Image (tube, rainbow, N blue to C red):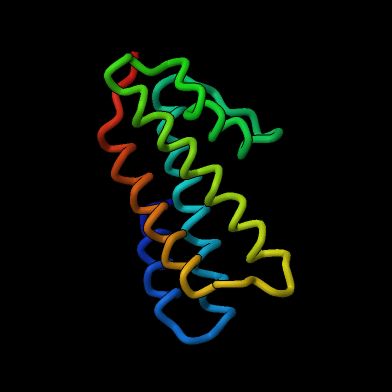
Length: 125
C-alpha cells in the first residue's frame, strides 16, 4: 500500500463541493498520515500493537522517547499534528454536523502533508 496516495487523494476530495467528499477527504488524510507514521516507527524497530494503535503511534511521537535531541521538536510536532488530526477525523466520521467543515478539511490535509514532510526529516537515536 502506498499510504501517501491517501493524502494526495484527500487533497482532491476536499476540493469537491459535497459534504461527503470533504468528510471522506479528512478521513483519507488521517489514515494516510497514521499509516505512514506507524510504518515509520515499525521501520525503526518500535513495534505498535494493534490494540489502541492510534493512541500508541501518536504518543510515541509526542513523547519523543526515541528521538535524538536535535530531532525532538519534529517528533513532537508529528505527535501533536497526528493527535489533532485524529480528533477531527473522529468528528467527521461520527458527528451529524461539523461546523467549519470547509476550513477544517483544508487544515486536515495540510496537517497530513506536514506529517509526511516531517517523517522524511526525522532522525532516530
